[in-house]
Amino acid sequence: MTTRWLTAEEQRAWRAYLAASLLLEDVIDRQLQQEAGMPHLYYSVLATLSEAPDRRLRMTDLAEALKITRSRLTYAVTRLEKDGAVRREGCPSDRRGSVAVLTDEGATVLERTAPGHAETVRAAVFDHLTPEQVGDLERICAGIAEAIQGDGRQAVRADELPWRRRSCPSG
Amino acid sequence: MTTRWLTAEEQRAWRAYLAASLLLEDVIDRQLQQEAGMPHLYYSVLATLSEAPDRRLRMTDLAEALKITRSRLTYAVTRLEKDGAVRREGCPSDRRGSVAVLTDEGATVLERTAPGHAETVRAAVFDHLTPEQVGDLERICAGIAEAIQGDGRQAVRADELPWRRRSCPSG
DNA sequence: ACTCCCTGGTTCAACTTTTAAGCAATTACT
DNA sequence: AGTAATTGCTTAAAAGTTGAACCAGGGAGT
Image (cartoon, helix red, strand yellow):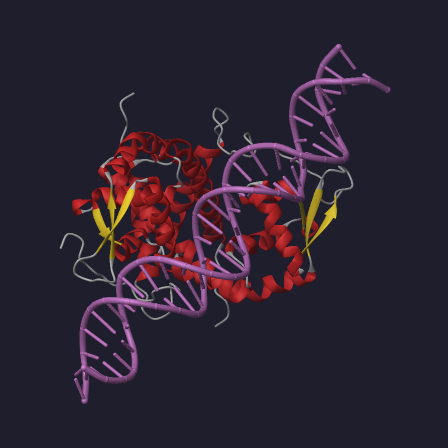
């Protein structure tokens, strides 16, 4: 097949996306590094745990929720554990497994820093979007995620090719 | 001010965005690592140079175009120089300056790998967006970039607070 | 020319991420 | 039960990134 290049409009959109995503990651990482002493991803680990039943999640489920590799998560949790924000527990139902648990200290960090984070996201993103655009953004991004994940045909992640589900957390 | 949290719709959009951007970066990095032997950002360095007049750009201009810090660019160019894809030249009009130049070898790598990259971006992003959505995406992202950059008030980049312009390349 | 400050770019040390192994527990199969 | 393949998670080594510090060159004011 002769290469299907991007159209001019697609190129403009793609470049705008690349610029925005780099700038955004930068601003958010910096803000959280300042206020919470950790990069955005690590904050997301805490945030995700805080919403999980019993504030705990299997490592693999957490990685899946965050869309990152297990390896990356292992390092993140190790660091957060050193900080006292997270604790690891063995999984009773599967002796291989381990469960990340948000500590009270971690919850406190989250509570303290969530407002600043929300403010940053709002200032960078939502304060200048119309409600329709918010909906558009969600649909567009959901479509992208879907296109990438619902893609059993080819190796998409090096780590763990198809996306699977596990369980165990509070039992 | 009592924290302006994100609305439910905004949260959904934000989470969809985070997931999509992580997955997307992952897929693209992996594809380019495979085909071009370099991460996406490094490919972007080559791509940006290839479109610049005389295939050359001052380091700071290149960093600005790519929305990355000069430090990060220094490392990228050093690596690409080792690969032979880029060459550094002194800037005649400012002895402090250096200019990154795309070599023929770099141009060849780009030509060879651009189709695969385009295909990946298309498959992950544009193949399932309507033309309206492409426009929406561009406008939304442009707005985000604008909100972050057009922000002289606060330190947005650690490196170089306000965004400026330079020149010199082919003169 | 002399100061003082700014700018362009690089470098260092600390940190994060990646990829490919690696290991132990579990499952599937016989 | 016995064994091979799979799964859950960690680790090692290499690569990339960050933020601060650094240095030489350029500019403005005197």
